[in-house]
Structures are given as structure tokens and as C-alpha cells.
Length: 94
Picture 1 (cartoon, rainbow, N blue to C red):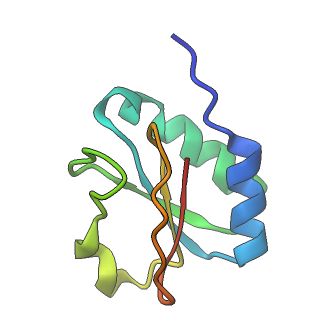
Picture 2: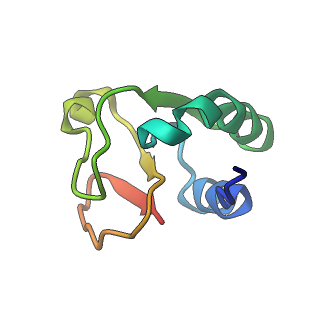
């Protein structure tokens, strides 16, 4: 099955936010696509990407363990958006 991961939207958001370090958080079924997604993002932006390999059970399952890594943007791919607001970390979820 092919998914629309909205890569153009992700790239636009990274550029708009001027993110330098980005964390990708994907559910288990999409983790196989993570390295392809990183390659596309890093080719079209100045950002470096990390792949969160921990759990991702939904929009409320944020990887708070990353707070000390100075991540500029968390990109969370899943089924439904979470209206999360934090002035220190911006999150793009879909």
C-alpha cells in the first residue's frame, strides 16, 4: 500500500520554520519508509533528521525524551492531528 506522506508540506514547513534539527515520529507501519523520507527531506532542506524509533501510539505519544537535543521540529505522521502547542518545540502532525 502506498501512503501520501505529504512530503512537499513537510519540506515547506521545515523551510518556513528554519528548522535545523528535525525528529520524525512514525507509527510502526510507516517506519519502513523513514530512511526514504529522511533522504528526501535532507536533499531539499538544510535540516538534519533524526528518526524516533520508540513508540508512536497516537498523536498524544510525543517523544519527550528528546527535549535535551535542541530539536527544532517534530514531524509526527499518523491518522489524526493533535492540536499541541508548545513555544519551545513546533510539531507538524497530520
